[in-house]
Length: 330
Ligand SMILES: Nc1ncnc2c1ncn2[C@@H]1O[C@H](COP(=O)(O)OP(=O)(O)OP(=O)(O)O)[C@@H](O)[C@H]1O
Ligand SMILES: [Mg+2]
Image (tube, rainbow, N blue to C red; front, side):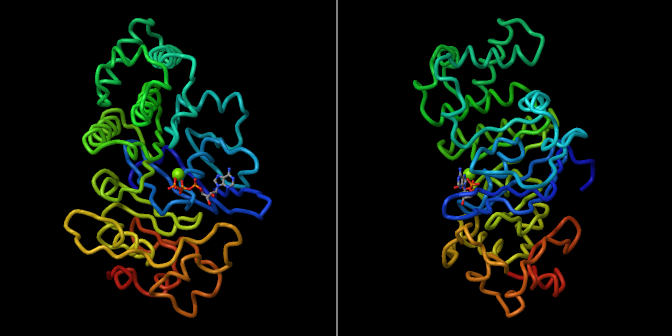
């Protein structure tokens, strides 16, 4: 890490109190992002990526509850500031593009009105100027005929188009931190490339920090500076993109890398077994039942995330006891 982080998350825990029991969706998660950097947050479905994003913006609703943690942005802990101040911070300083964009657009207003209003509420520009900027933004995100799109209502758009409108909405506020939860999942490859290029531009030109949540490790390899790998509600490995892809230390990271297609890697090996239910998680390492490198010591208490090298941390008993170089073998 070179410059001061713009966003710092410490020991964040969010549980859901359901009739069946307590779901530990996010369990003592810590990470930080620097201005102008992109952090890729990866892990299998259900591991807690979206709940982490929602917790950062304090958008968790019952039966969920943020139990503990700190979310530092600009000298304020977002988990402690009053709701009024929080509303000002959301959008302006930190914005989230939701995984499910239908719920976050107003159904009775046209896209143009919503976008222009967002821009006007954040900057001193005329409505005409705001509309002009909105059109340009939609165009840059690869939306065809943006002038016409401005006159449409959310229900008239495809899922992929709504996702890009949400992205435009978030970007138009020029936040310091943008969290994009699966922003390109519903899109074809060309449009996906266009959106990712736009994200990269914002990151570089505006110094925006981006947290990109995605299943696509190819995208992470190409775009991320830092990577955090989640498993069963916890971060099991964190490091620079080079560390994670060239010297993955955690057995889960290695399994994950082997299980998804990437350029230059033909042989795919699925990860055996199922991800654990987050209900009644064991006291030991959650990856133990699926881990090809498990040992008796792994039956002990859950391993903490610890530094294993420069800009590289992992939560595994096997690694902390060997040298990181040894742990880095594939
Ligand atoms: N409202 C809720 N009530 C109960 N459990 C919930 C609720 N929302 C999320 N969870 C649980 O929290 C866990 C983490 O969910 P989350 O949506 O963060 O996963 P994810 O990593 O984003 O998965 P995906 O890649 O599929 O989007 C899951 O086990 C899920 O069942
Ligand atoms: Mg999700």
